[in-house]
Length: 244
Image (cartoon, rainbow, N blue to C red; front, side, top):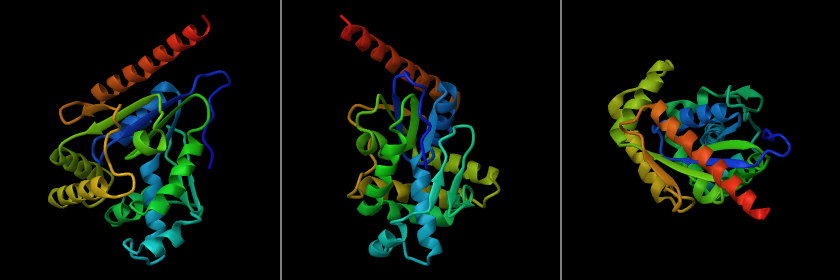
């Protein structure tokens, strides 16, 4: 795997977008990267690939030792092109399979294993180390992966809103989905992610928190673009100051 490096001389602009499932962060992060002409990295997809690897090996996601062994050398390829999702496991396109209920049910347990997180966080940092703009979305980007990111945003919304969005998304993709079951899964995922010992889900202290419950994707996107442009202005001011 390799990140898309920005053109020579273009300032580095790393944008961290965190938040629970159903806040629209995947769509927003990808669209923001396209709007800004930058790279995009879905870190949550990486944990889903690790979970799929574990499940295919017949391993219980709660068996930490077996999970570590199964995911230590993960044959994963993930693209950073915002225009197209390309996620491979051992050469097979698993972009759809990692979004199934089976993987969703196991990903919290797998992603809570410190050794799994350490392995993938190191990879995420390398993928974000190039120049230019890169948008990373996940649950611990601003707190752990890139605590010095130029822009940090935490998206949130009520569990009911997020469950409705996820149900509609799954049905639109041709996957079976029941709202009540999805809501219960959302609440349980929130509990597990926010209470885990390794990199719990929470906004960074200096993150901009945006509640998307009553906002359209375009309204949130406009705010994100404004924040990115504001970061550019700040860097420009700093550069001018350094020359005086």
